[in-house]
Image 1 (cartoon, rainbow, N blue to C red):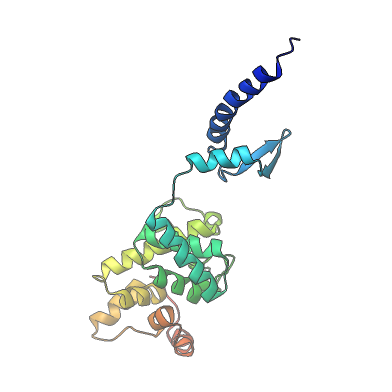
Image 2: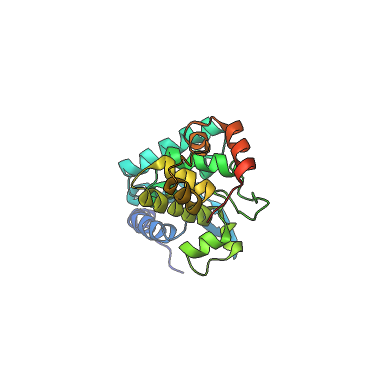
Length: 226
């Protein structure tokens, strides 16, 4: 093997380092975490290699104002409701995607499931937004009960349903929330008879109050989703 003069070796190393950064950055940006590297055949670990980190910083896009706002909202919600930042961000992301106010969305999840992804009601409502499988299949034909147990899927479909109800009631968020709880069929019948369908659920979602009233009204009328 040829031996290079030390000055030649040093020059080659200086030329090679920028290319190494670019290649490494391109490979790492194809991974979900973006800050992972392979060690061995199947071991993935966070990287602390300064060359890799420098390369990633050079090519990683700066967060947008909207992304910063989402993270800020999620952080505040996580602190306020004592939940993980990941769950709070998932709620905010799904709410914005559906066109629902994040504050309303997180209030709904609190009211429905107390932030428990595995929550299941006696009548079969599932997950964070307590979706009935029949309602979910109406919104997304073919969706399975097992898929509704996935938090992100449950949030996406649950908030989509709420947005549909908000549109149905011409932007009346309180009516939409009441319909989410009692069922749009029940709300429509009450309105047709000239009655107020409010059972306190909307206030519980929006303000966290009236929980006792909601419990009493649900016990009296039952919870329907027709």
